[in-house]
Image (cartoon, rainbow, N blue to C red; front, side, top):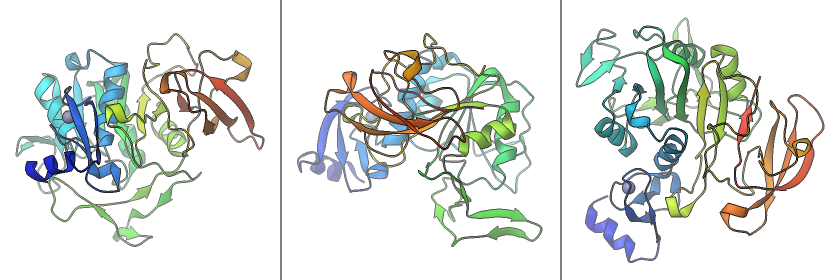
Length: 330
Ligand SMILES: [Zn+2]
């Protein structure tokens, strides 16, 4: 969208003021359509909500992320541009099937996420933005990401997470090439005009899948905050950690200070630091936020419904608190 049209939207009412976590400016967030995931733009940097959600989580967990050794696979968009600009240790890769792996093409290292040429323990942080739903063998990709991360390194990523128990496989690799189990669907690909085939619609078993194939434990963060321009569909941000101990630590620096949750929508397990231990979901539990009060984000009270992994019974409690963490554990 050209700047003039964007500015016109500012005066059309479909805007709100806020602070953009990507360009770090006071800005207007502009709705240019009803699919906010792609149509709710920062006036200055044109970032979209999932990019702002990603940067919010990154900045909360690692304010010093600019000093980290970072690999991003298939970078695209203003969050990638920011990382490339501000992080000296940032290494972007794309996959060009016709070029040799490990070489540099068009300014990118050529890497196949399922079979990377990096040595073990290379990076503090690996980032993928809407990539893992396009990988044909995500078991190998998650294992490779874990291999190339340093101990305690993190995989920070977004993917469209569907609120269903099981992942739907849309396409997979077979002896005869790619086998499609559903009608083919493509998303934009910055290095291939044909687009990227969607291979999976990830369901709530995704973190179990990651754990099984890479040994990494995952947290999922869901932020909704119009002041940060974060609203819309599929905004979960995943953080998987290599060699993360399977315990909750309320004092852990992993708990971001300002992550809020999406009331009444989809998934989330809340962990309220202010609630009694007995009322907190246990490690490995799963659940949803059922409803919330209308209090401000900082003091929101949520009803959380949860159950232990594989347990048929659900518990429901109303708890207050400002930090909500969602996790599927081992
Ligand atoms: Zn911005």
